[in-house]
Length: 113
Length: 116
Image (cartoon, rainbow over all chains, first blue to last red; front, side):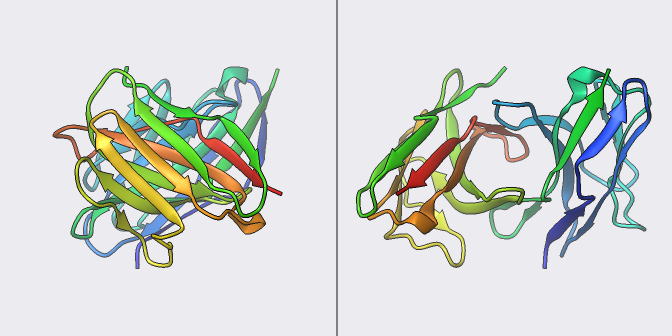
């Protein structure tokens, strides 16, 4: 089946620390991969995406590379800010006779000043 | 950017009553809208896919008679939880895709339903 597994949170970091949130997937076929972010009190927003193997998605200093060999799409940022505190969701989108998005459980990030 | 709103943002109701949640795309036309349910500290679970002018497609295990979905226009979809019970208490989130786009979804802020 199709599924997404991401590291459990919460993750607590100090400002300017390096961030990695792990995400692995299983899929029948060739999915597109996404990271969404949910700030407190707001809806999910697309952070970045990659549509094929070896593609790198990037936005706002965040990056993730589509690794088909390890079925992973880990999120990284070199220097986090307090404003990055949010919940991050890894997701895949696949055509099962109609496109469907499957989400990971979400990882809450707290960044301390 | 594309904005999706939900109303109400939270609702408390008595067991046995019905509750309607609205999802609107404010500045774009959405041929497809999705309804998700999110339990505490868990992922979003897709409940149904709603295409404007046609019947919604429900995911396995989702009762279509209990969760009525109507997508009457390109900017509005509604989810009605009928004869609500405490186990229906959850966070309901909708998303919308732009007409002609299958890859990008815009999410509403969610509706917290509490059934007493």
